[in-house]
Length: 322
Image 1 (cartoon, helix red, strand yellow):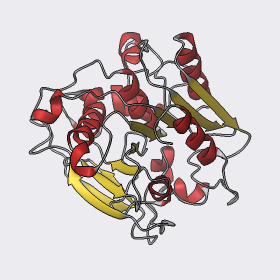
Image 2 (spheres, helix red, strand yellow):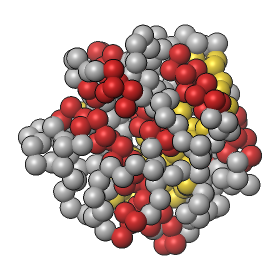
Image 3 (cartoon, rainbow, N blue to C red):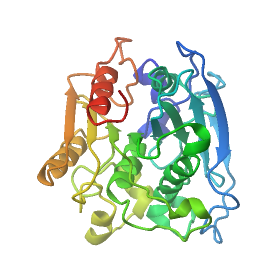
């Protein structure tokens, strides 16, 4: 995440989307980053995909680690190991308006902060729904389900508790995370190996200025178009609206947004919270007076945001770590 809103939202119109997880900062404690492919071979459903993957700087001439991935064909996962792991893990899903994925293999300040808590941080790059994948609007969810299964499958090797894996998502990545947290009962792809026999339900979820609904009037325009095209039916909109059909066993969910968000209507966060509350799912909503869209550890004026301490307390209260 960048330290101000402009740098978080750079590259002009493409910024409809999201926070970057890109700018590397040193963690207070030493940690190491590893990168791995999500799928053992080609990702599923790519028979009609003709795009070529690109990696660009989010701001021309800017930080070489501040990158975005377009037309993703080979999604990956980074793992940041804490110096003193406590067995918990968090899967982080960055945003990009479903136009791109604002992410870097170098890591960033938020996954570094997570590692400072003793939690192993995973950051996911994912495929995009407008690129011709057979799964269409579910293609990013396929990658999220695969990612949490891959973490579970390797929990023993990495010193993790497979029952203490949470997910966090930012902007459009919040939509992916919210769907992961509510569609874990839906098999979105045929198994490719033993990992795919494992559950995709996270132990907890954190949603930050999330895209949630695809219904009018609060749908995020670029996300809606990328997911469903220009003339979706009401049924298609509901099918990919994260607040719709929440299961009774959805995980505890933390939501944070800013009242002055001019990119994704803050009502998305309210709708998700209300839907969770109606299902009696443990949930917590924080709407900050200011912060805009894409706030990280700090807000637009460089002032520290309160959400890290609030999220830390929420995850501890729900047993992710002590």
